Amino acid sequence: MHFAINWDYRCPFARNMHEHLITAMQDGADYQVDFVPFSLSQVHIEDGEPDVWSDPDRYNELLAVMTGMTVQRYFPENFPGVHLALFAARHDRALDLSDWSALASILESHEVAPEEVAKLIESEHILEDFRRQHLASVEEHHVFGVPTFIVSGQAAFVRVMHRPNGDAKVARATIDRVLDTMTNYPEFNEFKYTSIPR
Image (cartoon, rainbow, N blue to C red; front, top):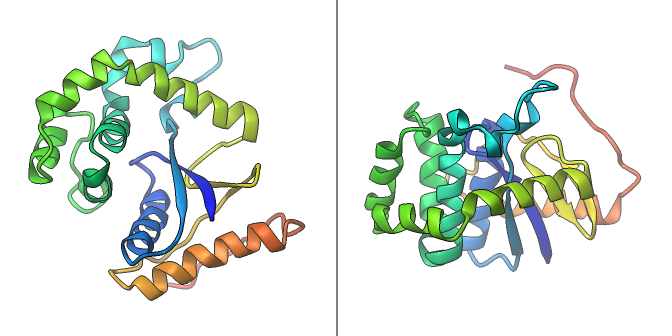
């Protein structure tokens, strides 16, 4: 099945869903996925403030996602590992993903040359592509956060509380449940627990 999913490395719920997705795909799940970048910084811009794409003081806030985009496009075989490592760096290790040295270390540990990624970010206009894809998500699908699935032109923000912890069966079941609901129950508009059992 072909679908798209948005991400920003700062969201723990995006981390959960992308772990399910990558785990399922590495187990052979037949998903054709467009990974679409999204900026949580941009959606929190106040009226009258410059957008994050044109504010040089906020450029580093966009570095992690631009790094993921660049690896996805130019080093696709390394993307799953780098993608999950960037989420883990933020949510397990509390690393500052606006710090290039942290990103470079992650790239090196996944056999991707940081200097090559840095050059590609600049020479291939990754910032402008990030802006274009983010704005298309907002304008075409009213995306407001991550993770958002886009299936057959319909978008849904989906938050799951659990991680697959390496269990491909759990991962596949989670993604398949989301896709089944979006495909077969389009009238299901909102379903949210009022409290979370602890």
